[in-house]
Length: 284
Image 1 (spheres, rainbow, N blue to C red):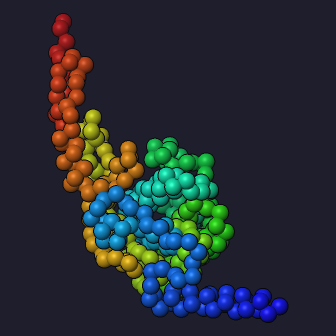
Image 2: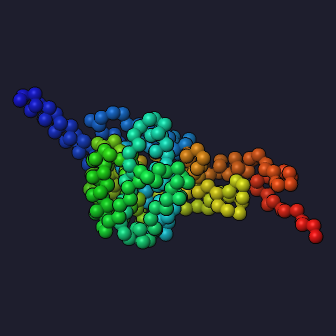
Image 3: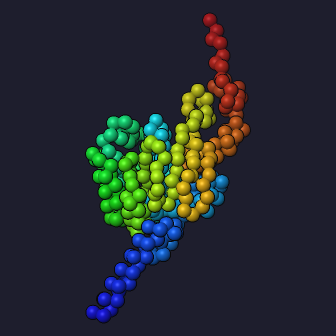
């Protein structure tokens, strides 16, 4: 009985310490979590340096954008999710389901998840649990329960009415459950938050396609790291490489494409990718 009482007191002391750390925001890591906090490299050295090696694979991350940029915000979130899942697969980690929760309002305004597009990104559509609810508070409740369950590879939510206390609960649940949580919000910049980081996303013109400059190529975002517990804020123009599942500096991606090897036309003529291929005149 004495040993049981002592272990209970130790557990309570550890819990109080975690709550104090989250409330005072003194540290980006909780001292009593099980296992090491792994970092996720995004692929762009400049961003990874600002993140001191990469993003944590657990805890809360806020992704914000203007109301008119909701679709671009979701695209950036999907790219982050793809990056995390690839890293988990490389490390032989779990391949549980992915929880995605949004309100009916977000569904009406920005649409649902498009399965062919998700498959093109390499996301496992069969593992995504898509939940529609009526209110933002229901989104937050579902996210917290999903984090506490430790049954998901990642949880994503779309909600706008989120207070500081709600972010505290999600941050603590994500770190205890060792699961990443992305909270997407549209509108003006949010106030105080207990999240590990806050990203501000702005859409940019996509890069030209490598083999057909008339159609859109790799997506590009203006990304602002407005708040970071462990690292330094910054702004970058990032592009997403769908072949390697990595972020790159958009300028570097454009430079590589402009210096890519030339292509052959059907007639055997060699032309650069950026040039418009003219078809030979048809003889009458």
